Image 1 (cartoon, rainbow, N blue to C red):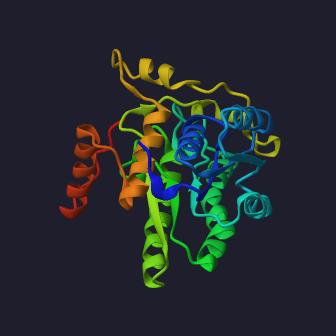
Image 2 (image 1 turned 30 degrees about the horizontal axis):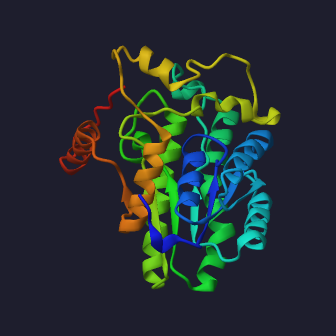
Image 3 (image 1 turned 180 degrees about the horizontal axis):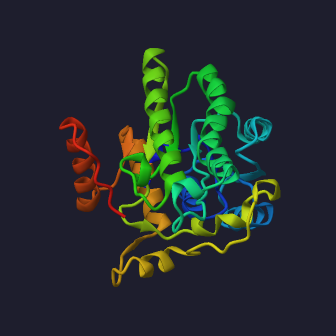
Amino acid sequence: MMVEKYRGKTAVVTGGASGVGRCLCELFARNGMNVVMADIEQAALEAAGAALKDQGLSVAWVQADVTSPESMENLESKSREAFGNIHILCNNAGVGIKEAQRRIWTLTPKDWEWGFSVNVMGVANGIRAFVPGMLAHGEPGHVVNTSSTNGGLYSMPTTPIYSSSKAAVTSMSEVLDGQFKMDDAALQAHVLFPGPHLVNTNILSSMRNRPEQLRDNDEPVAYTSMADLAKASGIANMKLTEPEEVAETCLAGIRDGQFWILPPSKSNDKQISRRTESILRRQNPQLQA
């Protein structure tokens, strides 16, 4: 899918060294965009950036920590130095917490701080660093925040921190959309829900990037890959969504001006309907693991 109208525009993607972020960077670049790849993992970032540059694509890469306002401000400055005005910002970086077999009251303050510092404050820091400049140059643009159907639309009881953080991202995105409209801005907000199935990324091994000061135990994670999680679910041959599919869905959503970038799914629609109906009928929730 070629989207000619974005040729020559500049996109910045956090979490760009792997998974959905890496695929967004390649897809944007193949559509003629200048792309700034950002990630906290320097070695992985350099390898991913060099691989795309070797293909003749217009990319630059900047090591960035989304939990740090100063680091995100540096990313914004370096992005403008590389390519000029920014037109698409993807606040995509996210982490999973080792919480799948734990109860919410056993999760520590450090667990909550790390999860929210990346998944929620990472989005807030991206908005604060980039949106003022995007508004100032006045050209049409897009801010895409990566949420999840888990928490962002309905909550699973097995992931308290992740679900809560993604609920916050959906709410932040709705507020951002509303404020852009209040100001008659040339920018549009979007919220991306990767799927429709479990996405085949390495988010479950996020512990590799957890800062030492926010570590408080060395218990192994319950799962290290989506394939492991699929097996543990008890559903034979569970289908996984590949990151490339998510990137295609995201670009189509940007092109079509969709706020809710949500791929079709009977299962997700059923869960969303069940939650919505329970609210409208004032019924108690019935969360499904």
